[in-house]
Length: 137
Image 1 (cartoon, rainbow, N blue to C red):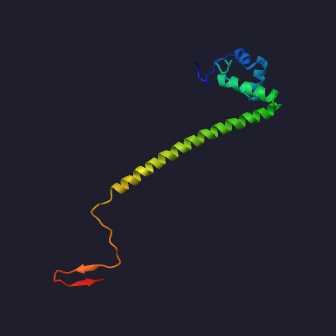
Image 2: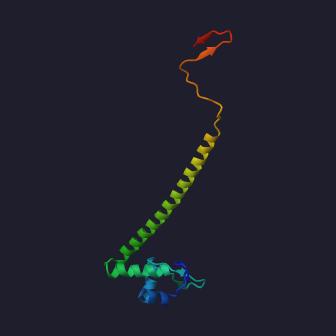
């Protein structure tokens, strides 16, 4: 089973799968609504994702009454949303990596503390003298 983006369908098969005429697919390609892959000789090859997009174009046109310019704008915005969602996932992963690294470094700093040092309250210091006298500073 090919992946959704593999350009495997010739125009006649894609048209049949989408329930359209091949000439309609050519028009949609010229308008930039659905842009199939190309062979070395320039033949169109449609993917499963392209066929799904063709069906969506047909639905928007026939059921929703959206004109082709509106459909093109809708598809552009949907593609932009998908790209932004991917960017958000990427940035969230980077943030998690940074947080993990920060926690690791913080733990390393805490582990490096000398355990033989004790904090001293600077409020009052009593100095002991071997002669038995003491002096408070």
